[in-house]
Length: 136
Length: 125
Image (cartoon, rainbow over all chains, first blue to last red; front, top):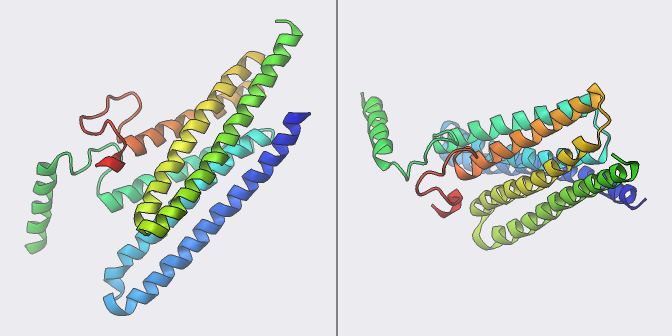
């Protein structure tokens, strides 16, 4: 049947996506490590550690994003089992948690909180507060 | 329901799933090429940010189609406990994923009104 044929191709495409996701994670790690190594001498380990972490996290979430795509396709092409569904559910949870906490670190707010541009006063106040705390 | 109608419905659900999967793959490819071009032109950061947004939109569209397929499947289902559990989990996963995607892209849950100024995706701000 036609659908069987298409599903087979889709299965390959899903595997391909998984491989791409792995490539993104590994490549992202390599790039981040390389950048860290280059800047290490100039900035020192502490200062640069933060951006190294951000680079790594960015690569990870991007890879996970693609992995979720691949897994959603997998649930179509393969007969679902409780194991495969559980894997997908877990992956979704991990991806979401990682993406949220990463956004929290980068932007300083949860996704459901308004962005600082919308409420500059609150943001300024908290910045001021942090500054004072730092001075003291 | 007559046997033929059931089979037709099953076929429709199957095709909807295939369409959803193709939409996912096509969206991924499109977003990837766009990201590469943007990377070369504008550098890494804006390209990756746009890429994640585009991937999110792709997943949203694909999931929407897949949920439609799953709903049709509930009609044709042989009502065994296992089959129902599969469908329930599948729908739960797909809806949760859709919600969190909306939250990340637009900054509010799907059932909330957009805040003034965030009616559009955050790219514009």
